Length: 146
Image 1 (cartoon, one colour):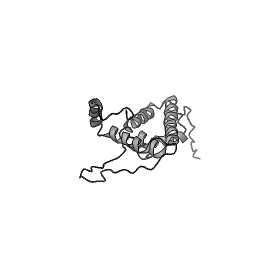
Image 2: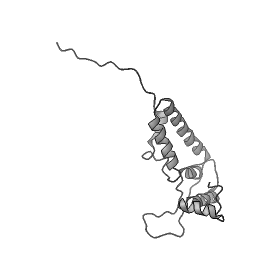
Image 3: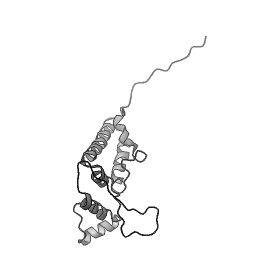
Image 4: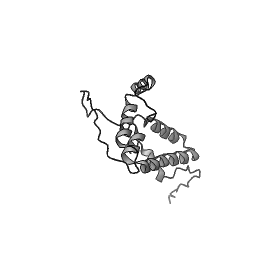
């Protein structure tokens, strides 16, 4: 959507308004930085706990656009691969709650910049986890009283 966004088109302006100017800011980010293998520093000017509107406001809320521009194509591909691997492993293990949680976080990350924050998305660490469900029962040790 960001690539196709046109600020001269009424339909796109309406969509951008409903998305709180996220399309416009993402497009601006592409214009300033472009795509890069290793990313590039982005100077952002957010609200910073202020209630006064800034005319030079620029903040990338979209996690995917942020990762692409700030960390680069390589990190973006690695993060997407991790999310896909974890989702598939969770699905094969029958952990559908985890699959739905990852899907929800993935969708929500189009409007929030926290996809790489461990506190927001701990499922990224599941790439290192054994997600299989053990069906065997472990024997309990019974202490014999004598």
